[in-house]
Length: 245
Picture (cartoon, rainbow, N blue to C red):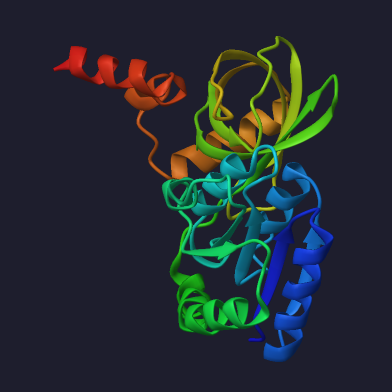
């Protein structure tokens, strides 16, 4: 399968260098300008490399979401940084390679060539990995995608590329992994943090969606004891587990 790359950057000179490097290696590429668009494209599982400009807002959050995907949805991550951006920020977000701005063509080619084996390895393993799904939240500012991390009959926990404003009565939809069934519901935020993580309780679920969700959970032997805990804020969930012993 031909290797390709997704680039989240607004730096024209950097994009030109990247385009020249991709052409040299025969790689296709796509340019994205927003965190939400980047996350949706990564979720499609079609990219073997993701280049993120860490000088953009929410770049760290986008990188962390990309690393949360598995199999074909997890591209090799390159972080572009300027002189004022700490190198550690790339690796702490799960980055594999660092590219220094202003980009040098030979440096970029060297890094891409070094990463090719990892890109191909991820593609070969893709068929054995679990699938993930995105939820689409209809917020006042528009529809926002977020990676679904856990699903229960009561609600879901998720990871967005940007911090989410806690609201009530949020319409949402998501595809049940491994099926063609779309769950349509309304939910209330029960928590949200500055890293884009959040938990929502369902307040309304259509009859058809409730039936599909229950059947999907039964097939995965979901435990009722976990159904509320997985929706809690991470540190509260840990306390709940400790209290149960």
